Amino acid sequence: MSTQAIFFNRSDPRYDMALTFRNNGNKSNQINGFEERGLDDIEFRFTWNIIQSSDFIFTSNRGKRTFDSQIFDLRDFEIMYMKLNPEINIRLGTKMRVVTK
Image (cartoon, rainbow, N blue to C red; front, top):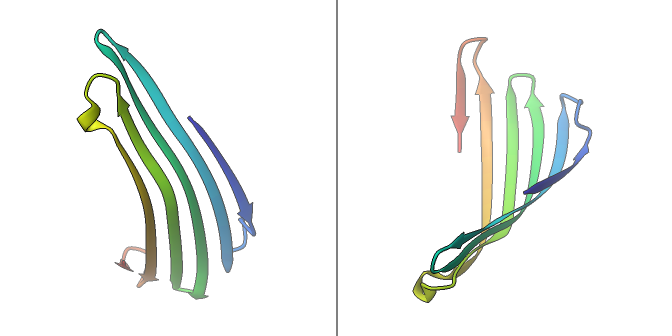
């Protein structure tokens, strides 16, 4: 498993951006063959403080999930996916927060 991230303006409370790369895979040797799983993912995250008590967060993911079994070929798959997640956080006080997704 490996994860690399690039940040821009990370400590600024007004806005920041992050680009994250993930590569996760494992291979298991069974008595009757192997099973192999994989995940390759790229994530972009943008956070913008609209006003002092609210944030706009946009997250985008794109990647590929794979599974390969030597003995059960019907279980093999390769899924390409893309996710877009806009979100608005509104802080109404120190103990109350409203999140819209």
